Image 1 (cartoon, helix red, strand yellow):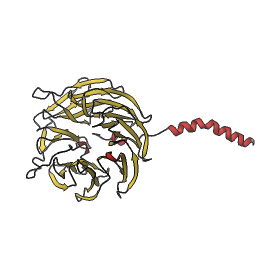
Image 2: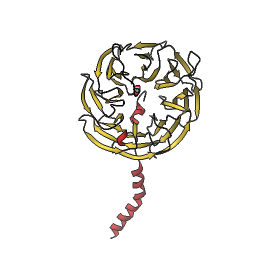
Image 3: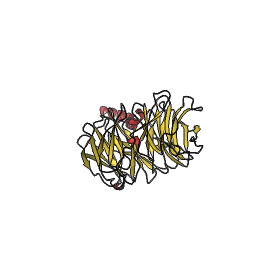
Image 4: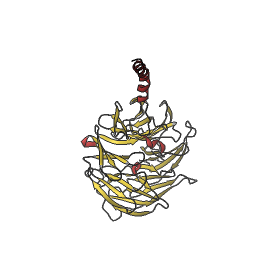
Length: 391
């Protein structure tokens, strides 16, 4: 009896510690799912294949994107209404929020995690904030060589506390060094082509690529070159073919860099273009189910998962990067908007907006493993992005 009483008392004393331990959580397998119609995000756990919280009050998330702090605790959510929201993943709450513009199109975090940059349509330009407080640090208006204000987009981080972005209206690419954040040093590359609509950087942070909507072609900047210069690649890739109506612009942050190749969507065509990353020449074309929006590579680079624009947006193609052939095609459901691989690439999460769910698939067998209810889900972002350049 005395032993039982001591055991009971010991367990009673341990209960607060056990409760505290139960609340402890790592962040390496966490992420967020954008719920675009309700201005909320689901905080999700990839190991549990489920949601662990919902954060509301994030504004217009119709074209939202996310970056993460280096410690993977905070998600910075960029809303279309100019909202910049710092979300604490461990408490599933808003840590800080500012509305910094009238119409925004994404953002990036500096390689040291100290600065958050946001690209804006209205009033245009890039605004930079302190990542801890979200206090403004500097404002970089996007005034082109023609003296007119331009929409800024295709914003990515580069090594050395630098950022690169494109000016849609002016047809320029700017690269800014923010070593001194209050006095940024900006290199402006003008006359690059008509209507650069988005940009991306290769995983090593060396090559910035901007797609052109006003003409067939892509602009390439080797950020290791001195002086910096913009060069055209893939000129006339649609020559001899009638382009189709573009219902949704491809997202260049979804371009797949695999080994020595880059797979990217061809605007207005049911194709992916394969580019050799050593000389940036086209080495192949891959016929696809529809007009690609995202081409997302499995972390090992063996397969690329591709989704499509309306009206063929219920389908995913899986491309073998060795043969450059579609090896599997399936239809998860209405309005497949985004795909994201788990950190080691064993599973891929797929948002099926009009079915109000996220599907989880085995990345090798393609078998469905789970379904997670969500309110009109779109973008899916996991904290592993904190370790990658350009994400």
